Amino acid sequence: MNDDTLDPTAWSPRTLAAQALGGFDPATRAVVPPVHLATTYLRDPDNQYRSGYVYGRADNATVREAEAIIAALEGAAAAMVIGSGMSAASAVFLALAPGDHVVVPGVMYWALRNWLLNDATAWGLEVTVVDMADTAAVAAALRPGRTKLVWAETPANPLWSLADIAALATLAHAAGARLAVDSTCATPLLTRPLALGADIVMHSATKYLNGHSDVIAGALATGQPDAFWARIARNRAMLGQILGPLEAYLLIRGMRTLPLRLTAACEGAMLLATRFAHHPRIAEVLYPGLPTHPGHELAKRQMRGGFGGMLSIRLRGGEPAAIAAAGRVRLWKRATSLGGVESLIEHRASIEGAGSPCPPDLLRLSVGIEDPDDLYRDLDGALSP
Ligand SMILES: Cc1ncc(COP(=O)(O)O)c(C=O)c1O
Image (tube, rainbow, N blue to C red; front, side):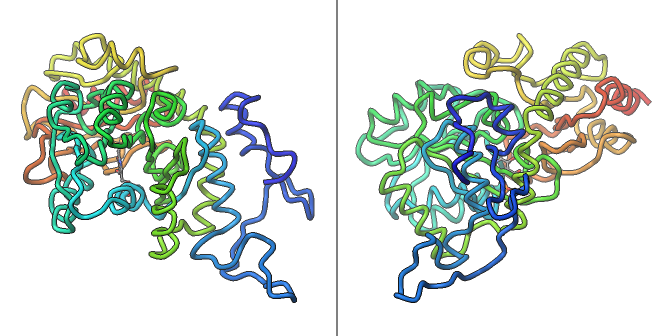
């Protein structure tokens, strides 16, 4: 970043993203800053390190550029990019101490739920699972003084239930706990958790932020880089969780088009949800943009500019019909993950496995940027062969 870096308070997210905060290379005036691949940095002759860089496991200029863009989009004081969404999420929990109590949602990204219930508990965290859409249940689960973290995901995989960030922040803070929000599917453009009171926001940057299904990355952002944040940063440096510079570069390039991609995904998802809502082969469409969705009113308050590109459909014919329909699509890609330019379809229970709250008749749809009419035609044909 240099003196011409765009002021995040002066420009819209679309402008900040398109210009990657306006960064350029001062040495050559190239409009695309170089990728900094060096793992180590020269000491000055008088034994000082004045550049601000010492070693690549702790810090990297390309990584800092990606972090500055994410911080600007989230309205954060600081951001950190990490090797994956899972390493970003687990870094928050591992900055707690064994014996601490945490409250987490029953409906959430399945691998994190598995890690929390198996590995984090073995490490010493006490984990209480609640319905994060039910603030009264969260209030009852909190143990003032002992609960150190409330974790929310909104909209939450794969039912797209909404969690009320502002209400949860008030409850968590009153109990002496922090609130962290996995905002992967909302992206910084639809919801800004920090402005609503969250302490930490987390993204699987593998998804919408990068947007091209070619980078695994995670991100954290905070409004207050306090001692807890410093512990996460220290762990990243000590444990080598920093994102590689080439991945950071690709992430920066992907984020330039985030607003355009997300607008297309939201429009496509809304159109498909509306059309599939009355489809004879579909029992239920789960999408926060539909008035029938239990989180719709909250989504209208909490999400700006769209309800996201993720929806799920539940098939009348149950699991066999769902798997068969996914097997018949020609345009949709049968794959896990989400948030890329290409639309993905997934029989979600197959990947979540035993103990999953995902209904077996559910297909999860990640809507990309293709023509939504094509997406509808292809899936409609697969549903009614
Ligand atoms: C909502 C959500 N959070 C976290 C993750 C984990 O991210 P990653 O795969 O980058 O580790 C995912 C991945 O699917 C996700 O969908």
